[in-house]
Length: 308
Image (tube, rainbow, N blue to C red; front, side, top):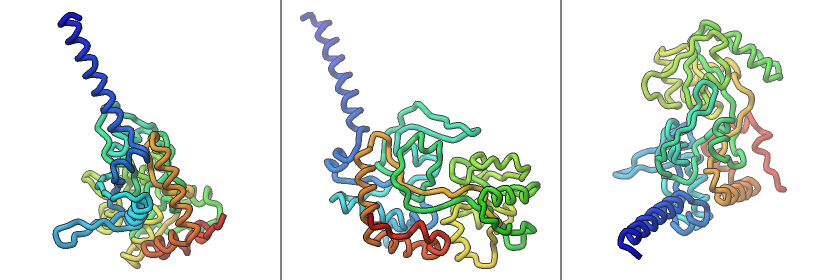
């Protein structure tokens, strides 16, 4: 073998090894996670799903989804690691690729950003565009998007008809020429509900507003009303009693679930089994009651314990 051929062969082997180890580092299903010994939980601090607070010199992670994933990690015999995210980068941290919903279409990025976590769990709503990017677990929390206004607003809550389609139409008729605060890339994205067709004045945050800051924003007169999902609304009604009112729905019923990469089917299945076990034993309802006690009044059927 000539020196030139030898160098070429060495270069080819090195390239193949780089590609191999690169694929191994990103292929992280249940087997690889167990070998590593750590479950990496990506979460956006939001409502009572993920809460962060300081205790001494350390940050403590709490909330419904934090406890759920901590329990899942323990169930698998793994350590637990939390990775703080935002709504704009959570799916990138999970999949290594950018994905966004723009002009009613999924936009995919092609740059490899590297995978940093194994699951997204923070009250993530199952949306069609998200389902193209990730696989969701069995749903575990009910939701919908409602219009919420300041108490002094002249927007009047609709009288529910019992037919959700009619209620949505009624709400959309009310908001013509009214200010409505919304947020792109979340379940509060106005494009998801065709709100621009209502002739409402849709206001999108200029600054990096968080979902749990939507109510403070309207109370600060940044807008007259805001879109808000069910879990956040339940918390807001308790936190600001008498200062806000629910006008009515702008979406059909929605569901929340844990998000997994599409190449992590074994991890997803393991979580589904764990979730079903918790639901059958009643442990899950106890956990929900800790963080969302009033949700049982709104969705009693969803939380009925099934023994099958």
